[in-house]
Figure 1 (tube, rainbow, N blue to C red):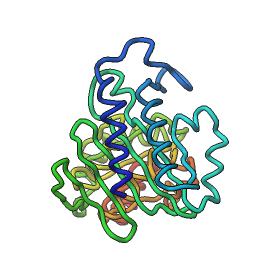
Figure 2 (tube, one colour):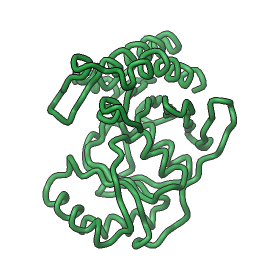
Figure 3 (cartoon, helix red, strand yellow):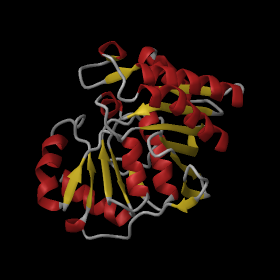
Length: 268
């Protein structure tokens, strides 16, 4: 995935960072609603990455967030592709549009429905997190130094901190989660950027992530990062994460016991 990381870094340097804190009103548009933004940086970065992946891996399927927003039928190509890449050219667009970090660029390689490799690039810090199925997860600094990623040790429920993104939760789960979060856990937040939230938990700096809507470019890279760092991820019903599934919720924790405890505390 070194070539893919270089491609993400190139897109960030060429299309994202030159526009950071330089966007005009015409550079920012809405998609499904006022909280769903897209900028010129998203669009140009995705085109560069898509072209680069098609050149590096002839015949692969590339599903970018913005291309899929324009043509939702693209998502069906993930079902039976021998090799597919899901790409989020600029995760955390709302932060980027506000001139604030964090935001990131993500890609995951999916081989016949299974996540095989992932890269999460931080354009501001200019480093990359990598995960290879069965081979671990690590951070590579811009200077080339490598640091292994490892989730936090098991933690009592009342000491757990993490991310709860309840925006898309349906009822009654929405009310249950919002009611139980301050009663059962130590602290929670939402960076509006899955790229950095997955980096946070994979590096041992928090104890849970909770999501409902599961678009593959948002979660496939991070779930592999978490798994290879020793963590555990499953749907609200307990099913393993699959990039083919778009809903049903997702809870990520350092271990299965923590998942069980968190699910019971928040959803019951």
